[in-house]
Image (cartoon, rainbow over all chains, first blue to last red; front, side):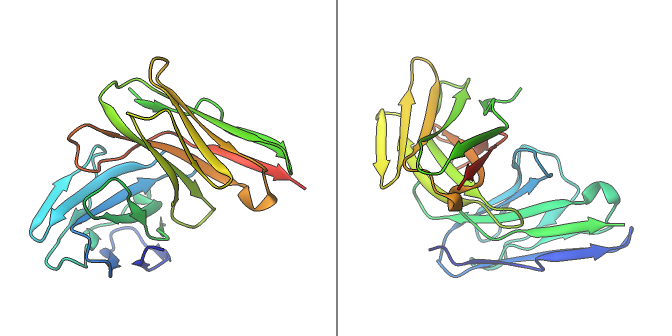
Length: 111
Length: 113
């Protein structure tokens, strides 16, 4: 059982607002990821980190930014939300090895 | 171009029968494959994986088969249960990609009582 937590689970915000999606894991995993999934579509990697102070962009271009100041924490920030950012955001982590564990996801709706 | 494809968007199976979910890939450099199960409004849950050096891996009711020559893998669920109803994602990790998963589009499985 993976211990990875995302907050908020559901959020509706207005256009132009700044939002930070929180992600924390208590497993000591060095690698963390953010995926984005639109309903009925595949998951796309938007950010990843291999450790503290390491962040990289993923396959799908995203206007969001991330930071990794502590091993257990990998927040994602949208400085100015737009309706096109409406989606499900999934945080994940892994140790050395091939299994990646996901959080329960954050559903963001921008109106 | 999508490197991992799940060509069936949905599958309906009677309880107790076998469910077979299929996945095709185009990149020969994938060396590890995983299946995830996802309920609505939840994150994906890891189910089972297989290394490219194997052709079968079994865990309880779940078996994954890999056919490298055909670049095809499948997930078999026997017997299927109503609680198995979910979206199933196939994912692959390329060689030296550091756990970077490439996902298929998912197949929605509905198991009817």
